[in-house]
Length: 276
Image (cartoon, helix red, strand yellow):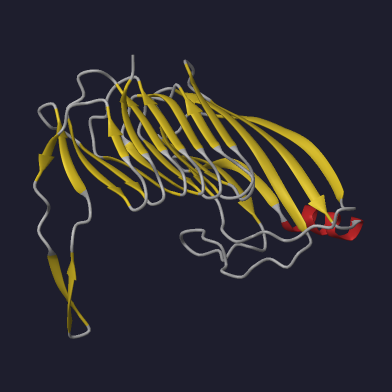
């Protein structure tokens, strides 16, 4: 199974200080399926693994609007859809910001509506599920006790993961990344952030090949590491011109080597730590 949570960029309408607010709590249980997709717009995501076979969903919906007219428009235009399509459990926030393209991305136009519909998601999932989570505004992402593979995306928020036993990708902007493994990853894994530290905890006996890059930060490691040779320059032809791409990562081998772990920070301090 896969859990996917997507969110949209650049949708930050300004609200008046004297606006209105309305809340409701939505709860639903989804049957086990091959995949779960959750596509949200505003708000945090918290996921916990448990010893069950259903996906338990709790969403606190908060509508903020400038006026009663805007509040009613938000109720009409923004819908939270929860259901099953084929082998996929799907949670989807629809609204005028959608382009209704195949990938469900946002329309590219900044919303001029005077409301925000914010969802605070809490999910309980079977421990072995693969998980993909993404959000943008007013929300961090946290996950604990999930052993499956993961794909995490955030903007303007933190990522805090614990009890990991899978492999995957984590990306965020303007937020720190913290990940603690209870079992070292067996497949290719990557962590990337801009303007936030990266703190990774691995189990003793880690064997992996690391690719590390930071533009304005330092790199620390609790593990002994031997340097790996730089990858060769890659060239390609585009519009009649030759383009050369150099590998800007530093390579380091821990133990006898193994799956590749890529860690990319821009204004970020990177710490590779051994959990006790």
